[in-house]
Image 1 (cartoon, protein in one colour):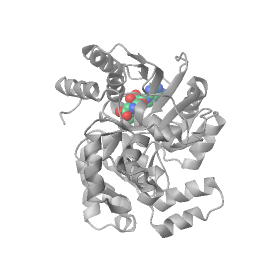
Image 2 (cartoon, protein in one colour; image 1 turned 180 degrees about the vertical axis):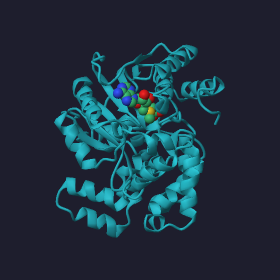
Image 3 (cartoon, rainbow, N blue to C red; image 1 turned 180 degrees about the horizontal axis):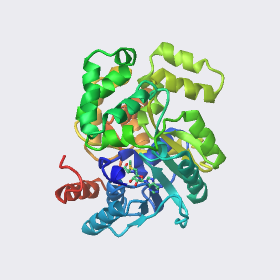
Image 4 (cartoon, rainbow, N blue to C red; image 1 turned 135 degrees about the horizontal axis):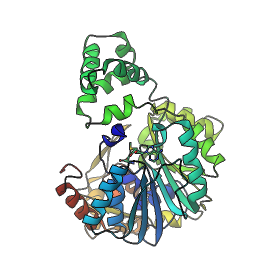
Length: 390
Ligand SMILES: C[S@@+](CC[C@H](N)C(=O)[O-])C[C@H]1O[C@@H](n2cnc3c(N)ncnc32)[C@H](O)[C@@H]1O
């Protein structure tokens, strides 16, 4: 548990109910309404930072967040009390125990699924099978192949060199990198990873490279295992994953599209992007958004100055200055339904696509029901020292 307690505390916007709704609708599904009443469970919440901010922003939701680490749960409870949140309960529960009750519309696991044993993963799927309500969505993030293949040997090297602590070990590995070892030349992702280690938050290296229970998984295997638990793949919580044009150049996109089955295309996508981390959504009996009404009803908001261009994995995408000026004027009035924004900005397919691309790049955001309450909670938690001041 000492190792887990050192895991850096970060907020994960992709696990917010409003974000999950948005992503599932982009995937072509109807999804639980984050502005109404809903039940939300986080498995492996650590000190509960994300769950606390979601509870502050979604006063209509009932939140339960569990972790096996009693110190982390005690800290999370203290924070909930200090924030006067009455819609969240933190419980010390080991996934192995049968300590769960009721059903949930959203169940999220971040930084958990590929950081536990295969036996615990099976237990987690059993919890999802029993506890995800019909029409509900689960979010599961994990380290994936082939993106991790180049870095995998670093786990062995760092663990052998960390007898005097992980910081000293990391410095020694960096020294070997600078000495021009062939492994780094042959594995540029490992080269870049080690070069970036010093900028990583404290605790990251131990969590990612030294944990005993650690794996990297194939997306298609995770999809199969979830299917056995009665859950169907429902898309990605990383919004840009819904827009191939932002990710792949034309020849790569054509090569992926030419493959015969969705399964082959999913695997090929992972190779096309050399993906090492995924945030997948799985649904239980999610109805399709057959007439696109849920897509038109998605609510987006501005989080700051909307730029005239965005940078995405494929490169820079620029928008017409006149379009961005009109969009800035519209979004200054507050959150907008996608369908209303399209009507206001010119009613063309390009406008809808541009709005979704801007949202995928973070220039716009899925609207949060009470963004001000979330910001106030974040400030209060920073003042309490739960998270670093940003
Ligand atoms: C890497 S942390 C992620 C914390 C949080 N989800 C986040 O993203 O900040 C993984 C968490 O899973 C918890 N965990 C690991 N195995 C567990 C188990 N068998 N039962 C309950 N919690 C467990 C750990 O205690 C730890 O807090």
